[in-house]
Length: 268
Length: 193
Image (cartoon, rainbow over all chains, first blue to last red; front, side, top):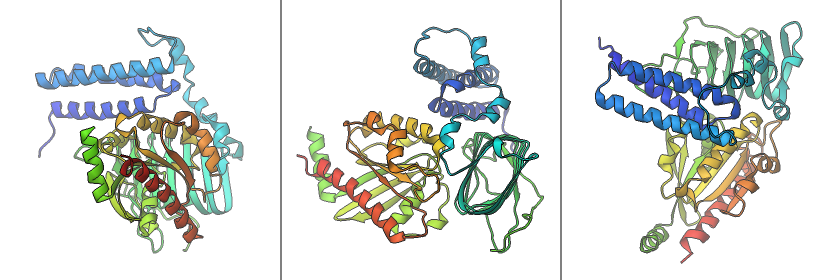
């Protein structure tokens, strides 16, 4: 068996983290600045570890990559906070400025604008820890900022978005179009759809039957299982991880053998 | 300017245009391409790399590059910038939460030197979804007037590429938008001498 050497592992890790950081730099906002610094720290650590294993050439090249990224992050910081020209370390106030995770879940960013968007379901719709939506017809539904909620959807949807859900359970989602999921944590979701894209999520389990390969990006500890539908053969096990553009299987997801049949399954 | 003259002549002879189709993931880029080619839009899956579609339009041959929009691969967009005549920027008008991302990405590519001359067609897609922003609000939310202004030729068209009803209208509208783009490029590149 050919197992990757320590140097290769570190290199792979370094490259994937660089790509993540580049992506984060491109989409940086004032609230994501602390996370950029944290990502830089973890890259520095990797280079330090790598110094023991890598060739001289690799060490120099990776250090150069790191300095270039440091410079970029600095530029982003100056762009977003133009008045502060000099800074040495991350100040405590910056840490506090970032809202704790729970609050973020309750008050999603840009909430007033998202409300314009089709049927918006947030924590105001929760009754006894549940949300039940009946007789949906070809709707565009967004589930935003929910924690510990059981969501049951009945009917058909045109498009579905999950955003900032924590430890939620979602069932009965039959979507003709695409499903877009972001910033979810510890959720258990059953969804049949045409396309499935998942961003920035952690430790979620999805039972799915999708018209095309599910996509994950900047996710980890994801699990995928098959949602068994009558007469429909869908994708569920061919997950594409865009944060893992290298050869070999992605460490960010795994398959589960448990199959599920949607409760009150539709016969279409 | 010698090179430009040669390029122009070559292009005029071949009547070829190179068009980049860009936008965030899930905007509907590939669905729009399928519609333009009259193919089944229900078989569309997220684009992993890119697809090249060749479309005959009027007397022109359009080479349309449909490039995947996932965040991680957006950094590779710049590999496709060379010699681009037109950009189609596809917006998911129902995805209000990511409009700021959408704006930032568009801003980045418009600053790109290699795309400086390219005509820009913005498609406010998914107009058929409930809660979709109108074309006007898309212009407003993306602040297109401020961002682009008079620096380049641009137009915004509504589209609903996945709509089941009125497919003829949908295709007509899409064709009209492509017509604008093609004629704008033609007047700029092929006839300017």
